Image (tube, rainbow, N blue to C red; front, side, top):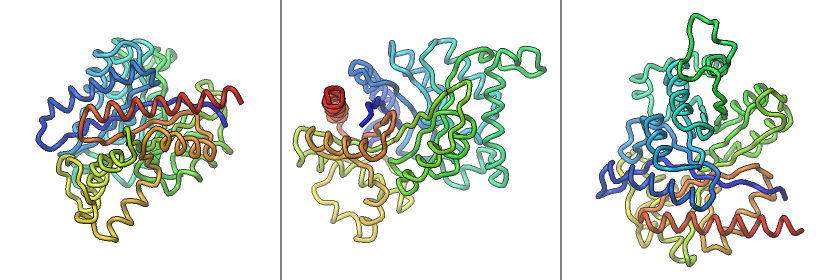
Length: 338
């Protein structure tokens, strides 16, 4: 079993009874905590028109987090590239990289990060997304290159900077693209697990080495809810379950505190749908999440796991990431001595 890095995905979750200002302060607190625990990176994801998620102005929030930390990599997981002009993103991330050299990641996806009506308001044209997305990645690479200095249109800041681009996906489409372009690939297993195994297979088998990457690099995003006891972990995980029930019901209200019995909230059909979507959700005490991480890694052999943790109580969320760090360390220790 290969060693793996662990990182944090934060959606800047808005909780019932808390302000968005509170949300951003909690995100910064979590980033500092992750940095102290030697997590590799802290990514924020672009979403729009959702009362429960405050990371819509993703580049701005990345700057806030990077400014409040010292060494952890900070980036997007991801920027939904067809919502933007390539030049604007090149300039924004060029600015971030110039402010925080060697610490900024640019993860990009093709999904809207919202509903159809809001996607229209963002100016997307769904008819050309599959053509537009690969072209935009090539545009970003050109804007970041030193060779673009003679072009009529230049990204300043951005030009000549080493800003790593990661391709994100929740189906097999982007696996083909990441392999073709020789770029690292991150899969959204935390909400779209169905095609993850096939996507990794496609990416590995068709990977073409590039000047950016000489061999495949895979990041799997998973959900994690860890606590001192199994019972507590399952109790606090009900915030995550309620969040997914709200997605099923198209109800975007802020995240709710834990409940004692989910069966009072979801129907059997909803429960089945949610548990299917949350297949790669590791819930338990340290021994349990360690075993689940180990089993996952034995099956998928990823280079990195990025953990999304929807826990209502901020201190318990911080503790969850501590437990996952301890679990990952224990797995690596066994691997290194075997």
